[in-house]
Length: 440
Image (cartoon, rainbow, N blue to C red):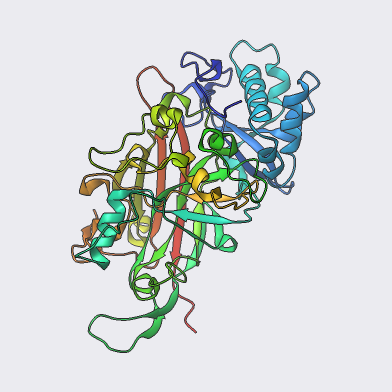
């Protein structure tokens, strides 16, 4: 069974819920979405939930309803813990059974409305946690536009290395510093070589940046030594979230050769609380097409289904709100907008490549897509691109300027899918906040 082989009745754009907020035009969480998160209400324990409108279905309560079939009850029960790892491990059959049961019970004509209402918790009253116990974190580099723009700043004469079009580039990140939306962190410090000097110095980064990414949360793992074929890869993907891989560009420029990112990126990574399933994204799948003249993927990274629907058209936006803007009551200012459909590699290819050497993935592991940038300057997914390496600072609406992030800045990401003939699917917001450095 494929995780999202095609649309099914849960994607019906005409479907409505008995919960009015789920039927509002711009609601990110209509009945066709049903994303997962881990939350806590009041002093209660953290547990799994599903978004519907402005409410959350408390999955442990839902699991106790007597009418559920065995597979749906097993899925809901697996989400009763303080992480979704057990649910992720169950695989697509359990995920689909739970999704279909939720869809049926939340639908406008459900005879079980009164029972399911007892499982609802208002989103405005909860606290979120990471959706999984993340054992390992790998960040990829799937946007050729971002890779070229950043490469040009580090290597003007050779911006795109020759392996880029052949292999999905990635590095292993630090899972211990991953936090959920709302994460605040001190400005990182470390060693950097300031232009014009001959000896490196240590201090707070002067070039703090964000990276507009998606996160891929792994479902069932694989046996060590056994690669996951690309045709089976999406059966190992529980869903997608937003991800901000904060980066200290001056630390990165000094340390990245020869082994790649280290202290420039392991101080903080922020993900959104809601995990959107591949089934909810089924109407927005797109063809995976390489530009004319580029090499086609090697056989282990290629199959017919990946060519036909490997891409996903997910709209992505990045915003900034400075301390001055917050104090003046001004809303966040949009910095850029792009789409995941521009990605040079698909999520199935990331899974297939990650395991080709026998590496074992485990439920709850996190893959980052890398910064998502599009073909035009306005679609850049980082300040390093938007400000051309800090040489052209951006003007903010209140008269401030930004080449890189300042203390007190908040960065907000938003994402959604929409097209005629399909319900709008949202990811919710991701927000992170920069604090002053803890100078030693």
